[in-house]
Amino acid sequence: MKLWEKGINPEPAIIEFTAGRDRKTDLHLTKWDIIGSMAHVIMLHDVGLIEAGEKNDMLKALHSLFVWDEEGTLVIEKDVEDIHSQIEKEMASILGTTGKKIHTGRSRNDQVLVDIRLYTREEIDTLASLISRLFNKLQSLSNQYKEVLLPGYTHMQPAMVSSFGLWFGAYAECLCDDLLLLSGARAINNTNPLGTAAGYGTTLPLNRKLTSELLEFDELLFNSAYASLSRGKVEMAVASALASLAQTLSRFSMDICLYMSAEFRFIDFPDEYVTGSSIMPQKRNPDVFELIRGRSNILQMLPGEVAMLASNLPSGYNRDLQLLKQLIFDAFTDLKESIEIMLLMLNNIKIRKNITDNPLYNTIFSTEEVNRLVKEGIPFRDAYKAVSEMVRNSSFSKTAIKDYVHEGSIGNLCNEEIAKIFNERLKVFKNKSAAEMADKLMGYAK
Ligand code: ARG
Image (cartoon, rainbow, N blue to C red):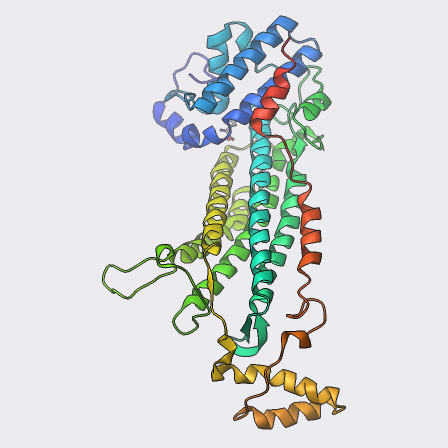
């Protein structure tokens, strides 16, 4: 069954190729296709295109499809192209003539846009709450180990005194900026394309403001032609935010792998959380963080993939756009799984104390020695030169955390200030779940 069949049997190989992976991956969109359809039906009745009885029957039928989806019994059948076609087929088989009215005044083009935006909004909100859990974990580790010193590196050479407080706290603040980018992507995503039909509007008198309110979009996406152009643009904004988050996860994972190596031994994990080798009995490997690093590094190519796919397309719908879905679905899955496993690992991280007692790190206190002389009134460059002479064989007196007072230093981490900004940024990620939306929309079935 094809929605567009008109008496000629399409060649099966063409249908298989063009449906691609949609029969499987469109299942990510099912509940949102149903919810978008519920709002559409309520609106069709509001503008007089269907009767009250038809609206009620359609809402009830859509709700039963929602339940089937939750139970896992709604599938896209072999001869059906995508989720939009499957839902229409189910509606016609439950309701007959009335079911066939569901596509009045819309196209699969605006339908898929709405579905993707509702899906993306939920995924962004889920990701934001995972980011928040990771942020809180990093900040609590930062506070817990704020007194434990760590050599800070530049050029991969021991440079200055750092601390676990500074290191964990740095990645927490990194997430704070990732969250800001994610909120920007969320805002671009959260406008309503429903009613733009194939990308050129319709002569039917739709009430687009009503569907925007029902689906809790921030605003209309006004221009019908922009609606199809927006596919690829929204994904670009989302991809950039996801890539930024991926960069944070990747760099943190790199640090972990390095710090866990035998040469560093700054941190460790219990035996149950590391992996072994099939040949070398001694191995304790940080595979989890290597895989997070690998997945995250691939994810940093996501904006490039989206750009390549969308950049030379003419305006209007083009089938190439179908391929965007897979990229975005996989990216959310990768990031959610990576953060979950990272949280599990961080709950079990072991921190080594007294790392900076190793004579290898004596010189990391030399800049503080320069500063000590500066405080005695010696010009900085003279103090620098004097200490340079001493560097090779001297062990400088250890700097104490309390010697650092300015904001953002090891003695004054400002974690509370960072948390305040983070929690302010978190406030926008707050939409209803699909089940809550479906219940709300069922309130229109009398
Ligand atoms: N599976 C399609 C996609 O994701 C749905 C839209 C189909 N529209 C069309 N004009 N063929 O893009």
